[in-house]
Image (cartoon, rainbow, N blue to C red; front, side, top):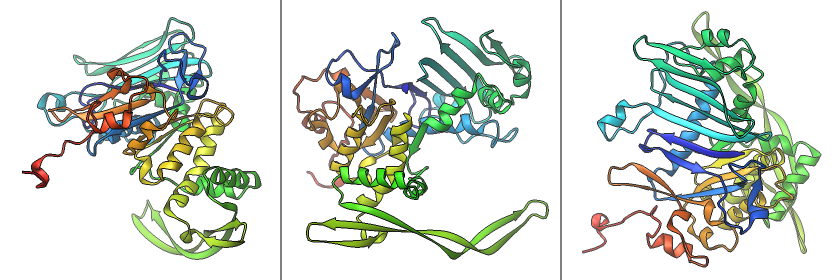
Length: 422
């Protein structure tokens, strides 16, 4: 489970911003909205978090920061070539920040062990990197790396707790690659779980990584998977009794690259096409509909269902930017409640999403106060992430009204620039 994420000097996140999934001491909804951890530093973690903010406030940048960190971990040892620069963007609206490195840190719980991993970087190289492992109350610093400005070389410090040929991994790590990523490429069993957490536990959906229907398609091809998806849709009050998949071969094109000759060839080939058919049943009759006949919300929920069911079953983390753009507010509520249902979410899966849907704030028992966050920009156009609990709202306070009145920040200030006032 994700415990905490920190980002600094990434796009509009100039100052360090911290998203914490550590539950407060509030005793409400503990059994459903939180997961006990067994560790003293964070006795309970939240199963979900929601982020509000005006357009261009920076809430999407917070999600992109986690996505970017994940990408560097996964690709720095393989896809990034020696000397290749990164596309990382620091805060550019003041000259000092534009020259400073970008920093990321994530703390997560895996198999009862707390890991704290972070690094700082510029577009040219990794400047520092570290990993702390809490197998007891006192952390073990498995490795630390920093750039010596005088020599221009990386300096490493290792703990005896990190097993394996550390010198080999160090020697193979380029200035623009992470030690963690390179060590895993060279078969570090000790560091593999940390790498795999980024690669397999995090699913981030936004305009850079839109929803892929293939997970749901593959699940629909299995008898048990099809039953699960139909039950999932029925729970959301969508009257689909069954879904068929008809797979057929159709003419298509594929592009082949000849690396030696430097030529590109387009070939005509048969490709597989999956056609979905939806069986609707009512008291007065039944009918079969094509995918195009279904509403946009039903299609979005269908494509999301495979990923959600996989995440709930395996205790993974789903991060979605602007969830309300694809789902009706009632469907969003049902999705959140799935993560808050211990019988369904038995393995500590988490849902983190941004939204403009303020009606969720006044839904009784949908969120604890520590699950709600706001993002707004200050006068320097730097994004600030603030937790609702910092405003100490009253127990029965009308949160939607308070938010729309600007009490918690995170809303646009609309003045005379629209030409609507005098």
